[in-house]
Image (cartoon, rainbow, N blue to C red; front, top):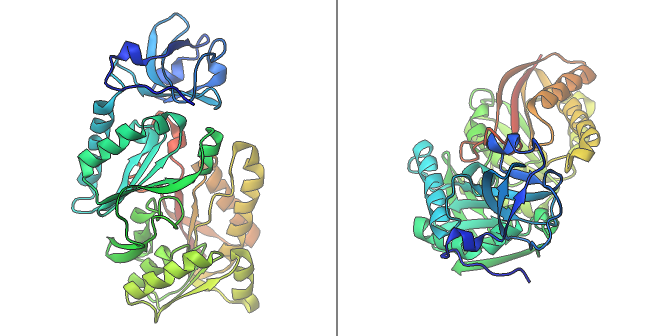
Length: 405
């Protein structure tokens, strides 16, 4: 079992050991990137257990930062402090509080948002979503797992939630040597709760829904439909719980068809349509998106607006070529499904494919479909998912509004 440590002790007693970097490997970290890779460290990570607090120095022995380590991971250390701050309850609480202040600046009066976004909020490995009075927490690394008592204490102090759910069912935990589980950490939780986002109501299943219960990263982007969906027939592929579909209807679409392969997600989508009084204009189909697209466009049928927001096709950098092919295939088909002068919202949530590569996919797909396409707007993830400039990996979402001529 990992050795326990107390955050109330002095910093020198918390640090297990100091790791020295190979020559010239400190540059990226000094610029603000929070990851130290195992091949950047001199020697072996002997005597270190997952989650131990360690110091990091450059090859000359000058301090670079303090963080938690995991000798089992390619990312051997994640930096938490750079200026000698004590790694403790006060540090965690202050960073949760800072994160809340930023969200309230951009979303005044809103009570549903991503409250902590891992590296971007200087708490690498921790994701927290706020759904009104409830918090959904993902502990993604051994270091955060060891700090969970302090994390929970900080969240209670800053938010005073009615309940806290631990959604520790991410694949990333397995890479860190952690068990996969879902459980209630504190308080009581309704089977479903209803939240309001940008003028619509959504039922959120904190225990059974994907990720932390809802995809909050697109909330700022649904307004892409405001000017283009009015009066249109809309096809929403990979619709999950129906957010794009419902915002299309809110924007004035005359008919919307949402497609997803998950019966559970579509059950929630139907509930959401009912909550917003949209069942007369919004319908959902359980099917594979590729198969449904072929069937729904048989005979040359086209749509005024198509939305394609698939799950990531690129699970690792080694799968980049395969994933790019998948994105080209779906975008070629959806571009062909848009009537002349209509619009496409095409998305990718893979951080392994950057904006340049995504635009190249769209160019190639337009050529393959024999259509002329122009980019109206490209957006990233919502403001509650900020990008740490020194860590480009924290920018993952691409949402493009295109007109197909």
